[in-house]
Amino acid sequence: MKRGFTLIEMVVILGVLAILAAILVPVVEKSINEARVARA
Image (cartoon, rainbow, N blue to C red; front, side, top):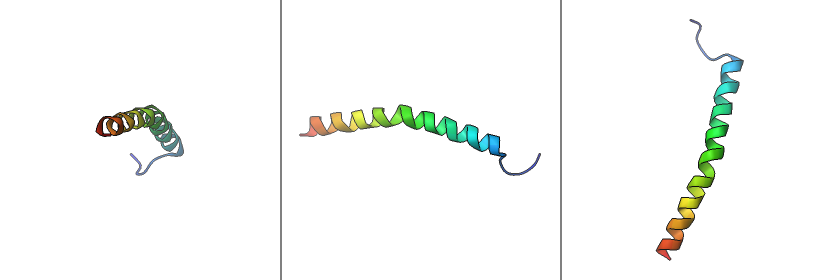
């Protein structure tokens, strides 16, 4: 087993992270806004 990541593995990991970020960012923003409204 060789050390380090191949280019393909890096692309796959970046793709998965991008998908996760695209899902999580709106959810986090929504909860922050709801918390701000509840506190005000």
